[in-house]
Length: 174
Image 1 (cartoon, helix red, strand yellow):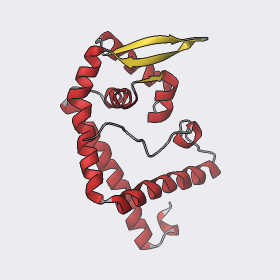
Image 2: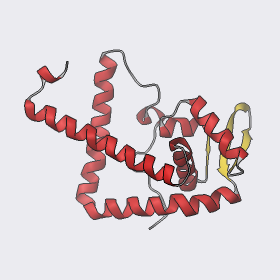
Image 3: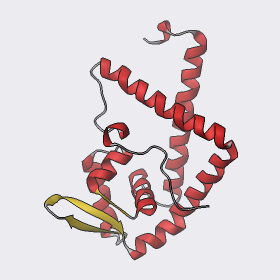
Image 4: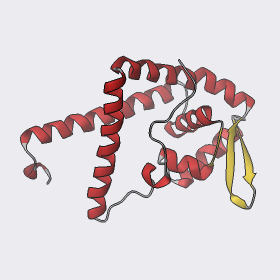
């Protein structure tokens, strides 16, 4: 479909880019499975380890999971004693989520080494390449969203729409 409209080099670059995204997705999936977690559990623990607490709605927006997926994963983590769910004043449907003591210990064992590996990998690129990677990935994401929106196919959860800072300053050093 789209291949006939692209230069051969652009088609090859797009294929390489998509394969790289899928490979990165596979790396995180493998890491989650290695530690007995689903992908959603990994990203929920990651998010809470980075930021201490979030509402369910914030988590859904940040990690691009449907609200029902977040709710289901949170219930599972709550049953395991890894998180605490607290009512948000004035909003009974949206809960504030935080790691429990047991969840913090688990996140320290699983999420902290992951973040350290990510930091070492990104630092190996150097500042200029890292800045370019973040900027170009963000720009490509926005352009792709705009192109799909022209077709009436806009994703319902977008970081830009939620005002998410893509730089994600972690505050937890390697």
